[in-house]
Length: 304
Image (tube, rainbow, N blue to C red):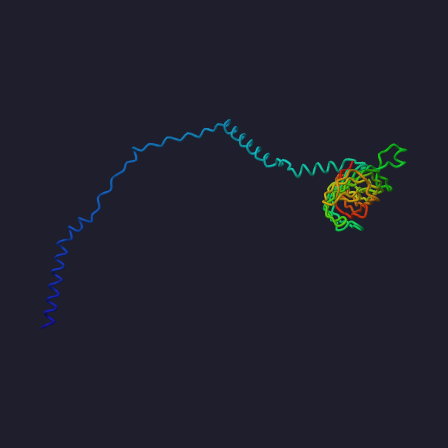
């Protein structure tokens, strides 16, 4: 009985659903229907107007190319232009030119920076000596061969004889007969010397070739030599002391005199740079009454 009711109820439900679907089907179809597409006619379309070819101004193109090439050339010229020589370059060239000039080197003028020590005896005690400056100049005596031929003296062959002048100040303080004071002694007088300047070692022979000459120019040859000088000097005294006057004292203001024995000797090791500039090492001693000065220093000389 129950199964029969279920089958009857199912059939009845299916019938109702089918009726509803048939009722609303036309309206759903009407709502989903698309509108018809419009008809396009090609008879009214016209062909596009053909584009005109671009106009090229050949003169303007050539002018632009020419200006561009000019700008490129000016840029390259600026890059290739060498920088103006610096002060160091100009100085180096001047030194090379000076070294290349012939210099007979028969005269020099020297200023020396000197440090000294003093040894005393007898009534002079405790002398000190301060750094000072010495001045020297000398002229080389031409040799007989040079005089006979009338040529310029040529140093380096033999030992040469020199004559000149020397001024050597010394100053400091000390004790004389137990009294303190300060002194200023300036020794001056003629100089006689013997010495030799060797020729440059990198000159080479004519077969040495261009490389040797170029190397000599780069290295700027240095000449070396030596000089032993001596003489007897007069003295000019300048001093100050509270002690009573004594003619033998170095502390009293006194004019030019002779400080016996007054003998002096110097030795120089010389170097000549760039043909005319000298740098010398010197050592020597100066004698006076009951005292002797021993000194050494470096000298700067100009040669001609």
